[in-house]
Length: 406
Image (cartoon, rainbow, N blue to C red; front, side):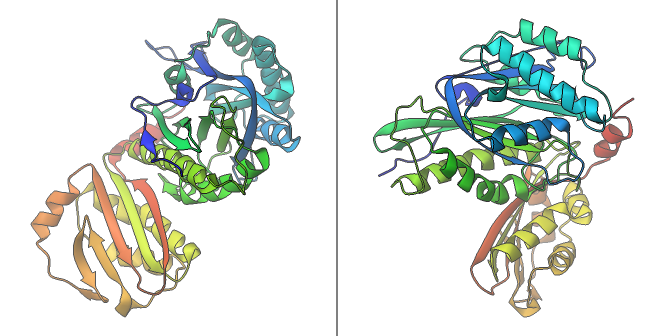
């Protein structure tokens, strides 16, 4: 019997046993105090690995290299990441640089190049400064408590790090699952999100890990919207090193479902943190849809709500303009029957069975002025349900993105 999923206070990717991380500033980004722009993660032992990547037809060569590494079927020991430059839109040189970046990091780790994953995030159309990358590998010091440094090294327009961790008892063994992520803009994932790294000290069969990860991504990071744009570099990686000493989890294990739930919880928490830190955002938006004809319809309806610019604007202004919810649901592609629909804003019913319900407008406005606005939708057709996360749209989003490279 699996124990409860317990949050780890101050959890970060090195909460999982047997992982070390570190970071430094090498000069890829403009200097400011305490800024970092290159990080590394190393497992003491080989890891099972699973990954989900962008579905964009134009991808960073770093994504191409990682796809090749994972497809080869071997274990992985670590990763290296830089921020400030995306290594995308630079032609064949991008692939050469990504391979060299992995090789340089592998030499620093003392492992094989094919055991290292490589990630980049930042401005598209600029080549990697390999001299600085090599300098970073020499400078970075790895430690058991270096997870926050890694999280900081991934940031671009992020205003804060995204870190979390949970513990759960599986078959009498306590295991940890922890992670870090980055992203504030160019986020409407068509796989996962900007960059997200998860580590666990559980022993997990690689085939099982690769089987469950796409579904978890679809219910968490793929239900996130900031601005409707999908990156060339989107990557979600999970590493499992078995340091906890549990019996290896497979699809037939008694605790397989509990492990999947715990991994899902970690990605839900990272998804929420990404939404809360959307570029210029002041509020988190949560859309909870139930009663849909099926799961696909529920996901379409929920994500259309959080991605609607009109809904985002209404949330920014604390305007309970529920007509925009109806608009979003209607265009989502989900099957609807108007006379069946119930709508709620932060728990206050505003429509029941397709008809408006009188509500105290000032009270709902006051509720919407908080840090989180939740839209509840019941389509009352079947049992499909899904949750999507997003943020409001503010003037600051335009300010940030009007001068991103200047």
